[in-house]
Length: 162
Image 1 (cartoon, rainbow, N blue to C red):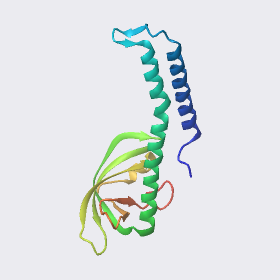
Image 2 (image 1 turned 180 degrees about the vertical axis):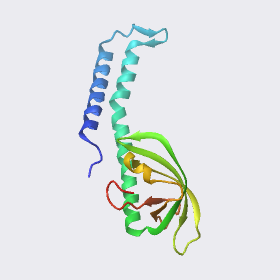
Image 3 (image 1 turned 135 degrees about the vertical axis):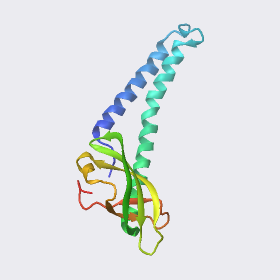
Image 4 (image 1 turned 60 degrees about the horizontal axis):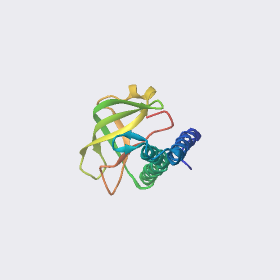
């Protein structure tokens, strides 16, 4: 399963093409033309063109691996996570919303059977329609990483629900 949508390839493709055009312009620019007293215009085209040409590959690779790590962690927690509950001590919306998903910062009191209760900071993205269901004092089901109790995942019943 590839994490990128076609629009990402279109945007990255345009950026790469602009980079190639700027590098090409750099080859045809007179080396004596100056952008500033210390920087030839040719170097400017090479520099900006290279950044635009290489940037999407570096950024895309980083996003691919970050997304893969998150998916692997979710799969690990689904297979071997410890079932527990998390009581919302505090909840704050950061105001950051991407595709109707709002980032919410939590402080939880986590209880896992057989373990000492503990408090943890956690963030997760929720659909804006479900945020009203999140209140201080609410108890949520969670899966906790057995190797690192600071990593947890809120158990959601079905898409669109908490």
